[in-house]
Length: 180
Image 1 (cartoon, rainbow, N blue to C red):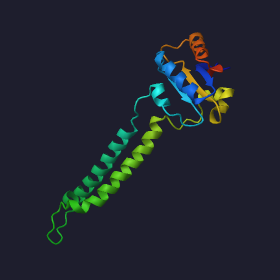
Image 2: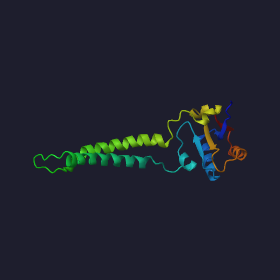
Image 3: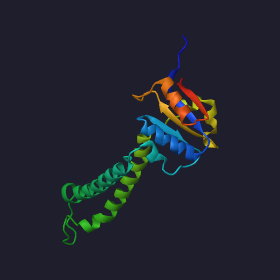
Image 4: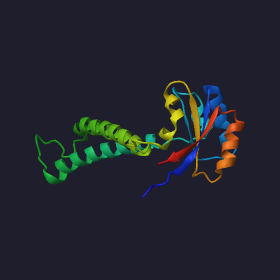
């Protein structure tokens, strides 16, 4: 039984980073929401041109750091006050200055781990294959060409109109992207 490929989107190829940036702005201004751009190097302003908002990694990192710090302090408090209280030399059971090194270290550990795993999860990784890899010309995305792909899941997407729109942006090649 043969499985049919589904349409993932339409991809336009551009010669320069400036053309890609201009095309991304035009695509965003035309009302498309589900799109992505690919370049062989970072392009200043591309995220803004695509209309991408701020990501959640800083918030996830903050929450991980707070969780690690509060968890470390809470654990030390529980051990020294509730579970195994020991009155040594008349010091108070809740001697919080002694808790600071462990609290700090667990804050850093919690923030670092949540940043790494949050970034991986928010990026949808691991993803060993992406439909744009099915486009033969996309091999040059890592060397000298620039691409923008409008996904078929976009509410405004129409295959013929979207392809015509990308041609109107002076794309060198416009290709259908199949999700096999």
